[in-house]
Length: 232
Length: 239
Image (cartoon, rainbow over the protein chains, first blue to last red):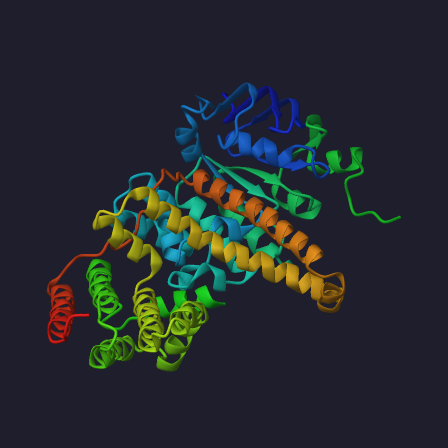
């Protein structure tokens, strides 16, 4: 079966010369949920920005059968939905409903269709009651839900969540796990939260200094790289 | 925060809020033209404009005192220029300068207080204002929130470490450094917002739900305002 995402020898260097990715190989199968672990600055976030065609490196990168390049970036962004770490960066329209319809309207959807789909997505994430609220008045958990709705409404094939548990209290994290379990899309979770990853992912990939050092079942990767909150 | 208050005001549901942004923008333009072309000694005209603005604020169900107070933000600047004019001996002209500036600010404030910025910009775009100006304003508005949030976070962080007293002790040099940090952090945040917009298919335009439609009530508002401005302007002696 052809993977949804296939990256081979991916390199990326920031404009200041810092090498962020040094030959990353990665594959994501349909329906799979993969956690990306690794120290801060190891290249995880850079990697997902490349997947979405927001930055461009060298090497081979295919997303849903599309080779990622500047020319195909718009098509790639329809296939990959990113929920960014900071929801405040993602929510920029005046009301929740306008924010959730934003992506669909950009894709050329009819206003009526966009509103219907947005309401459905808001219902899906349990945020239907927030549609007329201003995003900056929401709690962290509500913002996360709305940000997720704004991505789900575009019906991406792959969902990427960058540090999804940041700012969320334990009940909020629990709700998010339940919600994500119900979503059929393949998912990539960029996280330091091993419990959260263990609850959702079947596989983990460990990044360090822009390289993939190992991959396997979540528990195995946690043990191998001593990636847990074991204070002893 | 000032812009959040404006944003909240602009989301009201009054008759004036529901009017097409083009009618409100053009009506405001007529008022501004009247104010700026008024002769120095034109108390009835200034009173007339004040009455129009007060009526607008009341119809829009905005807090009258708060609007009038916020419009006064321009007074220190206009007083500076008025003082220069007064020094030259033309006190009446100096007073007119302050009044004109204040009324203009109040008119602009009423416009943004009854029209959400995205709708106002959409209206201006339909009136032929270049897309680049519209887009720049939209970003400026969004990033203004970012700048204010960042400055608040930094202020809280500084206060938590005795920042107020420290700042007084170290003086302006360190304060200037803080401003540089604020801009750097805001720039990073703005980059993040732009990336998030691109990720959801941003193509250089904000598409709105319910684009405004110019109806008979909008014609009534615009026609009425233009007519009142014309009558007020015509009934007064030339400057």
